[in-house]
Figure 1 (tube, rainbow, N blue to C red):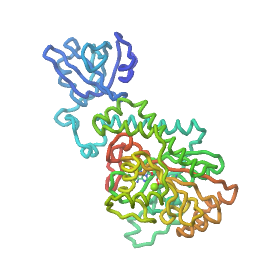
Figure 2: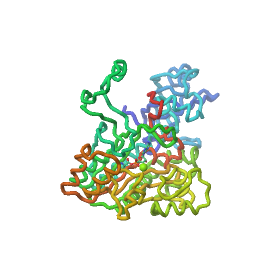
Figure 3: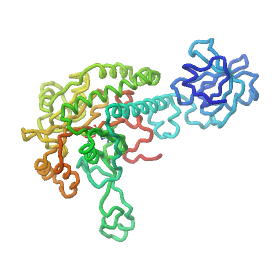
Length: 463
Ligand code: 4AD
Ligand code: MG
């Protein structure tokens, strides 16, 4: 008999027919009348399937002992309309096979209600909890929606390298990649000679696929890259990971306004997909994590994002009467307290801040004629703060070279990037969206370590 998944059984399972279902026991309740209710979950749905096991099932007495929380089973039985409240259907078992037991004395998830901190230390078992099941399904839906969004608009999915020899953001937060024996070099007190290294020069894990994506956009039009991204920022915050996933669209013939419009439609598409396709998981986040998450997502889907220049934002912040920890003046980078005030208090919706001072933005952003600002944009949202960073790119060779000098970058090292401005240069723009930041927004989870399967943060890479 073919195995059926619980999601299917709960929605349109074959009533009064025999079914084969497999999964992990969440709970077991014994009744005095000689049967037991077992709640089974197989990951296909937030909801469990109720299985009724009675005395007629072979090995009933020993099954009662073995069907503890966490054990894995195969059940063959009849799918019936359930007489009781709480579930529409249930399976009346004819036969139960235990694949693996889980010692009730030792199984870490025997009891409910563990803290997220505790669960982080058992990241190999947390997929079996309600929270991480819901998170995994929402994350999966978001990823599918990301591809759909770009594929339906004719964007090409480009795989940019993980190992790179150029620093896109110029912020010096790169993890070095080497095959040199550093311990040996240290013992011998020798200088590092990178010509002897694997690539013949220093290499790192990418902080962004943007520069490489630009090469494809400047030849094929609209592209996007979506992959793991690495930053060695030693900041132990609830919004930073050392390894995260970033989606980076890059579009030829786009200016900053086109870029902003795409960013808004993109975020709205993702949120809509999650609300439509993961109603049970989203209900869990509302009930158990943050009761506003669905309402927030709906508001974001229905409204235009607020567009505010950096200069206007500074004025608003200065006039706000708020006592910020970091004072605001034109020319400083905004702190998350400022970003939160703008998006959560002032506008109560996503805010696109644009035209930032060039002093603290990367070399590739297009310079405005005022000589002070660049065509940068950040999308700020309630809860998660900055979820998108992007810009129109500097397509003018002379201005780019001048900016590289200003940023102390050697154009020789970026020769291929500069070349794009030599041959058939076009106006273009793009942005990067942090997948985990979107998940913070969607789920209401407050720590970014709880929206990625295996978080990497300073001093943490156990699994
Ligand atoms: O603003 P960022 O640094 O922009 C770039 O890397 C550009 N090259 C993107 C582009 O234009 N193609 O990063 C983009 C987004 C941020 O807004 C944030 O959502 C996410 O990536 N992000 C992080 N997410 C988790 N942990 C970190 N350490 C992150 N750093 C950035
Ligand atoms: Mg940024």
